[in-house]
Image (cartoon, rainbow, N blue to C red; front, side, top):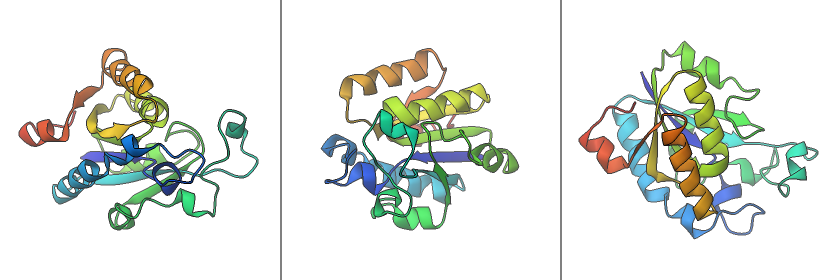
Length: 184
């Protein structure tokens, strides 16, 4: 089975006024991400939304300003994708990787997932670390390049190359995946 992991497409990262708003570059991926998710859902892929969710005393706030606090609107999937998330599995996470202290591994293994596409924000932080853990678990992994973004363009490019060259993930646009549907 195929799965699409949607990393942190949350109000706290994608709506102005929040501490870690990623900017218009991150918002620019929303239409392509929605189209890709609709296509994958229609093909029967499992959709899994990761949701950065922190307690007020989280140690991550030593590195980053407080963000995505449990019980606030910041942890909600953006309205543009909320209907898709409502019919999907949502996994709260408190660290960069979607696997750290979450049931994600069980969610994927219980459904016999063998290949995964990854979309979302931030390419150089949570997308990268989740991808590393996918590859460490031997999942065939594709990063959908027009559906990932970061507030730091140079770090975004570094992360894409690292995921391809070091982690062995496939890089492809959503249009290339329509032409060549194998995700992994």
